[in-house]
Length: 174
Ligand SMILES: [Zn+2]
Ligand SMILES: [Zn+2]
Image (tube, rainbow, N blue to C red):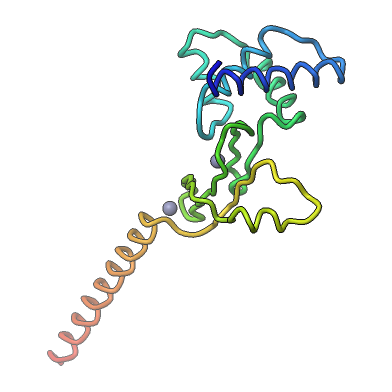
C-alpha cells in the first residue's frame, strides 16, 4: 500500500469509528464521498465538490453531500475555513502539509503557500499541546489589487491635472 492508499484507509477507519460511536448509518455513499475528498487536493466548496463528483460519474444528491460534509466536519476529517464574511472553503484535514493561506481582502483571492512558518522547535514550544497540523491565515492585498489601485490613483490624478490645466487655460483668457 502506498502513502495515499494508507491515508485513505486510515481516514476510512476513523470515519467508521465515528459513525459507530454516534450511531449514524454507514452508507456506501458516505464512504465514497470521503474517498473522493481524499483524492483531491486543495480547497473546495459545495458546488465544486458536487461538480467534481459528477465528473467522475458519481451521482449523489446535494442533500447527501451536505449532510456527509457536516459529519466529516464533526469528526475532524474535513476542515472548514472562513476566509472572509462570504467566503468559506473546505479542505481535507490530513495529508495536507502544513500550509498558510494568503487572503486578499480586496478581491477575496486565496492562495496557498507551503513553507513552514513555524519551525519544528517553535512547534515543540507550544506547551501541553500535541500539534497534528496547522494552517495560518495571512490577510493582505494581492499584487493584482495593488496594481489596480495604483492604476486607478494614477487615472484620477491625471484627470485632476487636466481639469487644473483647463482651469488655468480659462483664467489666462480672461
Ligand atoms: Zn486581490
Ligand atoms: Zn488550505
